[in-house]
Image (cartoon, rainbow, N blue to C red; front, side, top):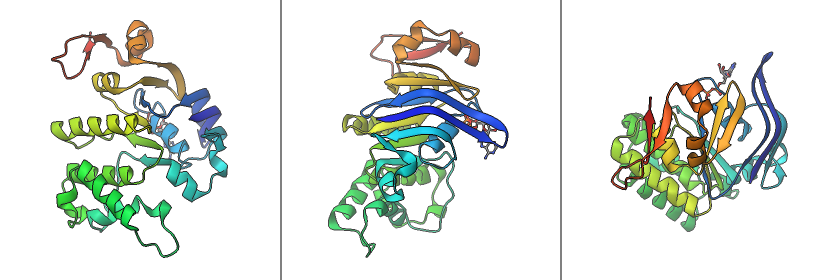
Length: 253
Ligand SMILES: Nc1ncnc2c1ncn2[C@@H]1O[C@H](COP(=O)(O)OP(=O)(O)OP(=O)(O)O)[C@@H](O)[C@H]1O
């Protein structure tokens, strides 16, 4: 479980995040929604110590600030929205996911190699493993970074718009991968601007506005209390229980 108490982030004198209390659980997909600049990425960055913060973040009962880097990396991994493309092959990038587990020799064990292979298969980059990242399409590169994140085996995966650049089929496959990681007990924390998708695949939604949590509820409860959604996004949401629909939630006027 990730617990946050009195979390404050300031850039200069400007406070961009204040969270009184918030809990994220394992075995759930939680999506952070909100307008541009609401503080979604800042919240994810705090959880991996990429941004300085005041307050308390506990990961499975241990203070994030006191967790050694290696243990932190085994617990929690963050995939930002935009990545650079280091001059390396796909297989090398994905192997980096195993770094927190390597000994002094920095060599991958048979098990590490198997985990890397499985992660590449899951995101369909196994056929691209010898290719260099800067020679890949944006969607192929995104899938390679997702494979690296999966290869970490971390308990919590923080993904900022993981579907960016993915075609429709790859997006759908990504959702299935995330659902299976959730079933395996991982805590998945997403940022997503696609409301129907966020509502359809999440156990909980966190609505952020101007750096503060306005609402934390399951999608069906958001449907029943959607004043904040309407004010912020100027649209409403509706659930349509039709099994032929890919997403059971749609945007309405
Ligand atoms: N390094 C920084 N220095 C100063 N201000 C920053 C910095 N990073 C973010 N901010 C500001 O903090 C606020 C929250 O930014 P954040 O990136 O968390 O928003 P977001 O909800 O993820 O937005 P988006 O949907 O556009 O990605 C914004 O007002 C942004 O301008």
